[in-house]
Length: 394
Image (cartoon, rainbow, N blue to C red):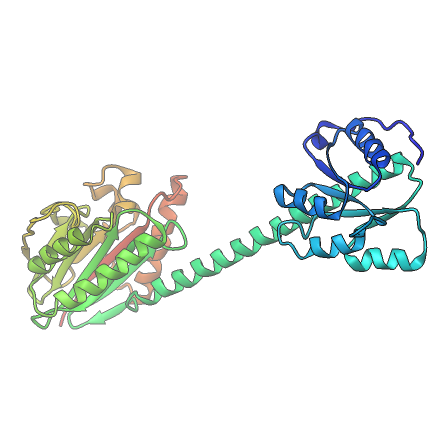
């Protein structure tokens, strides 16, 4: 072998380890000196068995493997190595004095990445070592990027499925009920949110409008919101809205999910409405362009305190009156969470338009909820939800 001087590589190679396997002491010493001068750490093995022992201790960055060795030759040891999961992808260069095509073919069939004949020009040897190490690093990086991209695609697909599932749980809007027309908007701050609304058949023959705002964001909040919706549908079959909210609180406290729920239930009667507000911003009743009443929260959000009870507020209602319920995602960015006037102003809901069709109303509500964040250059920090109920002539 020639022994030309090889310049040291950059620091990036300082921690890379080369396992040199050769039965000749002189070859091992020479290769060790050359590779260490090039900046590599070197581990030595005098035969295939010792090499396999070293591989089991710690996988090297690359293996320099002599072809001809007693007891176990290079290709035999390489075939065993390629079956071991921890080192099956470690690059291997076979070194041999033979340049016979059969030996070269055997080397690659055994799993060699490169083949160098002796005597070796050490500059070429070090260049090929570095080239194989770079190639492996590039493959690893590409595989990692591919895996990360695949994981991201899977996550995005799962989030899209969750979003579609959540949207399917919302009742079709806009809709008309006897004496009422209804609309609702839910714009989550992410793919999946913790806000929902629902229209439920109550125990006395009147529909019950519900708005649910679960603390937090994302899939976990969305799952809790779905569970709360199902619970309320069951509870409202046989219980008035104050009892239903009280029992919902007990269920959430017992589950200890880490989430609490701001919620409102509104019984849409013909001459009056019954409202329970549990932690949401004030619920507004509008007559023309005037707020004639607000219903503030009567207790802390369900899921926070055990033994919490909720009370009903009953208010007369006339044709043309409107009830607006919003989550705090539509009040906090523009003032205090317990204020509703600024939000109604920004949503252009303080003016009435008796001639507006239900479809036009629904489109306007969606446009205005999206626009309030753009107009104020405010990043949407929370799910934004609105439930609109308008009393009509029967």
